[in-house]
Amino acid sequence: MLAAVFAWLTGCSAFRSVGRPSDPIQALQYDIDTILSDSIFVPARTSIKVLSLESGEILYERDSRLLMRPASNMKLLTSATALQILGKEYKFKTALLADTTVREGIVYGNLYFKGYGNPDLKTEDFDTLIRQLKAQGIKEMRGRILADVSYFDDFYWGSGWMWDDEPYEYAAFISPLAINDNCVKVEITPGQEAGDSVQVRIEPSTDYVSLINTARTVADTAVQPLDVTRLFKERQNAIMINGEIVAGSKPVERQISVWKPELYAAQLLTEALRRDSISVDQEPAVGAAPSFAHELAVHYRGLDSMIVNLNKTSDNLSAELTLKTLCAVKRGTPASAQGGIYVINEFLNSLGIDSTRYHIADGSGVSSYNLLTTEMITQLLESMAKRDAIFPLFYESLPIAGVDGTLQQRMKGTPAEGNLRAKTGTISAVSSLSGYVRTLDDEQLVFSMFMQNFIYPTRLYQQAQDKIGALLASFSRTGRIAVRQP
Image 1 (cartoon, rainbow, N blue to C red):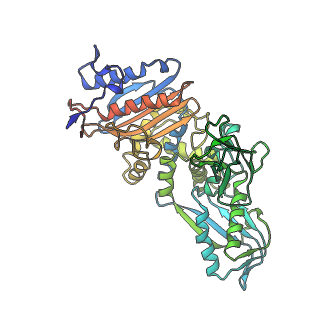
Image 2: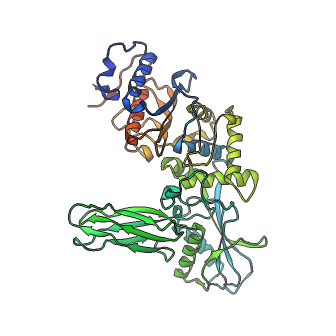
Image 3: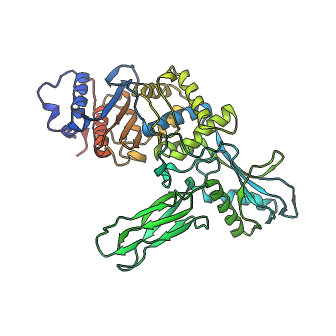
């Protein structure tokens, strides 16, 4: 066994510097303060709270009641409320409904493709729906495939979202009928020689989007960086590929959002039906199913897998669809984000968290209008740990340091690796990290760190968070020393 060297945690021999207290808790506070004394924090704002889950003792606190932008730490509120209100057995539904009877394998009326907020529906899931149609002998559609989005209101973006984020996957449009994260995957491969056009492939292959490719292959250095976007200001589904890529380099993949994702879903279904020998005479459109329409096929997706995807990969669309689903289930349809926020506030109030002391604008944290405190985040995390029925799934959904999700590359080679579980958060000039960690004494701690109002690279603040996370994992009340295998 070899004693681990942790001087890197606080830089320049802070562990052995003059004045470091001998008391373990005071020493921990001293070490965290040393990390935060770096000049990068002078113009920034920092809020931190650390407490023992077992005793409730506060081990460290700095401006924990300061209102700050949480970024994706907002997803902790959304996912916790979903587990409590919807329940871990909840299933998101997607249905095909007909407004007429089926005679001799022919649907003479329209087929309504209705979404109920499933954020994880994929093109492959059409197999489930088509199999059910074929089991009923259906072979022809005389009407249209109509995308039914009546389950939600018609606000397709979150409050306070930035207009120029529109073409990118993290700001995909919010629709109860979502498919493939409401994006297309664009793969760019360099040509054989310098001067060749790049090769572009989209997935899924569909006529719903078009390509404008002016990118070129270069011999060695790409002077003009590769840029992949969409004509979003024109509200068009034309994807533009510009810039340069070096010959022989690996393919580049980007996810680009689509305009009117519900029509995209209907188009993909129409194309899938035709490929599967079910003829569809007309092109898809958007329309709500009448009250007398009856279901022909249904697909379900469990909330349990969705919650894991939401937090592990920090999926914004999942959070926003969950927010509106909370409203739909508790307050009725068409569901709104504001109604979902009301449900979250009700849940937080039940935990003793005063909803008048913070502000929620969306479900994902993309909005700069969100204002939370590290105090209320730690209170939420502490309360969730006491809910035996839902805590295991909530805990499992959080990224693990050095192992998976958005923490896969962070805190490797420290006592936090494989131990600390936390939700990350990043938007412009904001970085956050909140979750759970076990100390050397196997004491579980709850922590929340918000950092904002900085212009230096985000990675510098993430590195500071990682150092603090490693400090918490190596903390011992009994003076134990962290060891690692040689």
